[in-house]
Length: 94
Image 1 (spheres, rainbow, N blue to C red):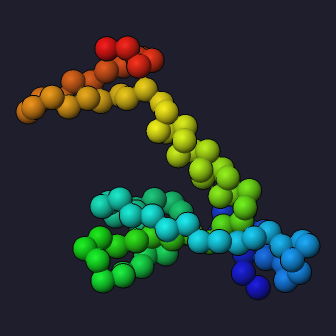
Image 2 (image 1 turned 180 degrees about the vertical axis):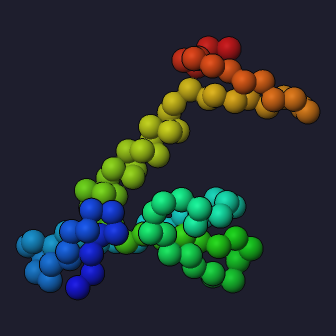
């Protein structure tokens, strides 16, 4: 029986009580095996490998919320030409 790789909840065979395991697939050009997560590396014949996790619906919701939080957070580093300017404690202001 398959389990959620994050919370370890077991997949149930009946539709009424299924935890709806699905696979999240990610690729970012970084060796994600360095993270302390049970990511499965997948070579798909593309330049960059993909990493995957099989997770339940509540854990997928947490992952999506974390992505949304990251996307909507203030930028901490801005690059200009050949220099990097570090911007601290901004809330979208320059």
